[in-house]
Structures are given as C-alpha cells and as structure tokens.
Amino acid sequence: MTETKQNNFITIPQLENISFLIQGFGTERWKEEDFKRRPEWKNFRLLFLDQIHSDVIQSIDEIPRGNLKGDAMVTSLSSLFLIIRTADCLPALIVSQSPKVIAAVHCGRRGTCKRVVQRAIHRMIDHYGCDPSVLLVALGPLIGSRCYEVGEDVLMSFEKDGHSTESFQNHPTHEGKYLFDLKEANISQMLNLGIKKDNIFSVDICTHCHRDFASYRRDKDKASRVLSFIGMKG
Ligand SMILES: [Zn+2]
Image (tube, rainbow, N blue to C red; front, side):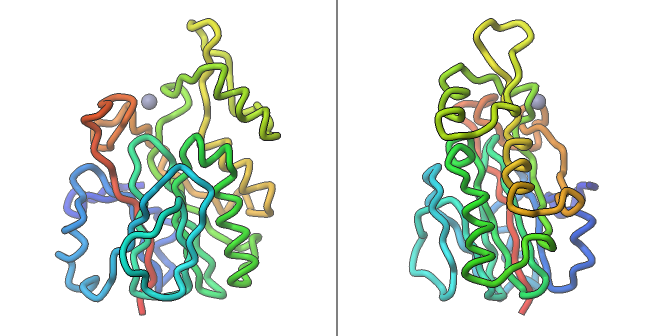
C-alpha cells in the first residue's frame, strides 16, 4: 500500500503481478490529464460515467460516444481505462484473469443500498462468463466508519431493502445517530455472491481523515473528486 509520490496514485501490490492489468487510486493531485503523460498509456481511452447513485451497470462492448449514465462499467476490451470519481464513496475495482474482464464500481450509500456491486458482479458472471470464486477485488480510499455518521433514515432504508444492519453501530455520543461501515456493507454483498475474502484487498485509507483524498463530508461543495482506474494492456 505504498504511495508513490512521483505517480500520485496508490496501487494494490497483490494485483501488480497480473501482467495485463493496470490499476490505481488517485490522490487529489492525480488529474485526468496525467493519464496522457505516461507514454505507455498513450493509446488508452478514458471512460467516465455520469454517476447517478444508481444500480445501473454499463457493459462496454464497443467504445461509447460520450459519457454513459450509471455507476459501474464492465468490459473485456483492452486499452480502456474505466474511471470512477469519488469523494468519500467507495471505489471498487474488480478483475477476472480468465476470461480477462474488468469492472469499476461506484459504491456510495445509495448505490450500496441498491446492491450496485452485486449487480456488477452478476454482469461479469452472466454476460462475460466470469467465476466469482477467482475474482480479485481492490477497494480504494473511502470515508471510514468512525467518520461516517448517518441518521436513522439511512439505517431504515437499508432495513427496508432487506439488508442486515450489521454495518451500522450506535454512535458513541450522538443519540439517534449511527456510524455506517460502507466498506463492510459492500464486502458482505461480495461474499454473498461467492467472492473469497482472501481475494479482497483494501488500501485502508479514510478520505475524511487524509487530506490527500477528496472528502465531501469534510470539504462540502469545495470537495474535488479523486479518480480510481482500471485497464487492460492490449
Ligand atoms: Zn476518518
């Protein structure tokens, strides 16, 4: 989990020996134009979504014209960077080595309630023939559970949609408030689909505590967005 000052993004070391894969979680210093500064990436196209806190999954089987709407992209095509923008939400990058398929998922509170990560994994299985038991998952910086206070309405919305409330804890001092573990909520959804716990890797950085990362809760409307990306070499 070493951050390379030079590159301004973090990678997951356990995924670095996959020869065809490029993955990273940008700090606030890593900008869109930085992708083109690396000669070895100059042929990559950058794909962004108009993120809408939904459970809409986009399969990228050809290059789209303009941004698609949704909160996850899945592809078997190489030379594309699937890019997710976040400020506190969880970015999840998923890779299948055989067949070669990648996904990038924006797991916010609302998307998590709608099980966006499960829908993305289902798409990998149903549309691309992936085996969930060998998928590898990289979880990026997100707001940690100690910093993520939510109201009872959030807890109730999860209960209403049939989720366990294990990812919520009573706030230690604020009565009627809860601390929400967004990462654990998503990990639990992944495990339920047959992803192996040992195949899930996390950078374990709280965006709210670390100034290198965008945090909506900390900086409100001034918050920028950090870029998380995954791509396959051609
Ligand atoms: Zn924190």
